[in-house]
Image (tube, rainbow, N blue to C red; front, side, top):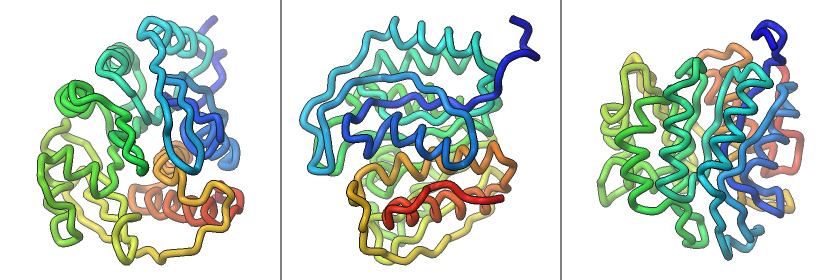
Length: 262
């Protein structure tokens, strides 16, 4: 099929959550609410719900690679969101896929899912190292929460005053052009910090809301990163894209559609 005949779509590479609070099903809902066609490649099956993650069963790396290759031949992938990778072999598979693709780096968003709120390991230590050394240089955006940022930057503290330095350390680990967003859901107030590729630093203020969604706060990181990808694909500038993603999280917490008009 000639490339001009392919249908544009965004891709989520993440785990499957049977409760649809997180993972590929949550991402696809965000894509749809933004009016963007979405496709998905599953990295792992999980047993989880709002109460937490009970079990993770990674897929075979060959299955993931075959899925990615088929999708890239059938649709024009205009952007990618990467979520839970589970094992080093799957992180290596995604790295290999990105290395051979022509997807613009500025439309590849990495949500470095390392551990669930309930304490379950969602990426093994070898996978974290590969993510830092090989995958991070192939993405244009990374969206750790404050605890994940501390792990990536190899710092013990994730206090608010240290967030800018964490972001700068992570930026140096990537290739030129990397934008870093440290999400502040664990901070009070829940402000997000954006370090743009050009060095501009911006705090985006947030207000804590009482979640009325049946999912509670489960999956908010997935919603943020997938909404960020949508805003970028739709043409938003960095600060506007982060602000739009932040608004999508609030709508999710209040059980409202997570899309947004342009």
